[in-house]
Image 1 (spheres, helix red, strand yellow):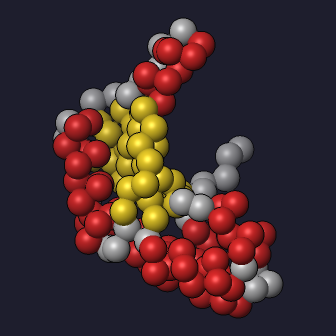
Image 2 (image 1 turned 45 degrees about the horizontal axis):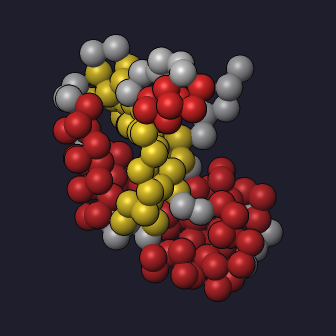
Length: 131
């Protein structure tokens, strides 16, 4: 049994369009994409295995990151918020990490929890806007 750690949606669009729509939706909620990891290419180059198209977007909302890091500097170990875009047959699955679950290790810190709640609401709106 696996734990569901993401907020997800399945899209009937091209892989490239899914990445663009996701990036645009993140921007609308104040997130920038700091990193973009092409897992398919990386796995082929590093260990010569074939993998489906799968991209990891490292998304960051600077205002939320600042609040969380000001409350607890160790939050940096859990940033950025990852969003994945991956092939799923003839569809594309987009998933965003659930910040409440990711930051659960710091649940005793009310300021960090407040940021996680806000980040989750924003990421839920991102995913919902893709439907």
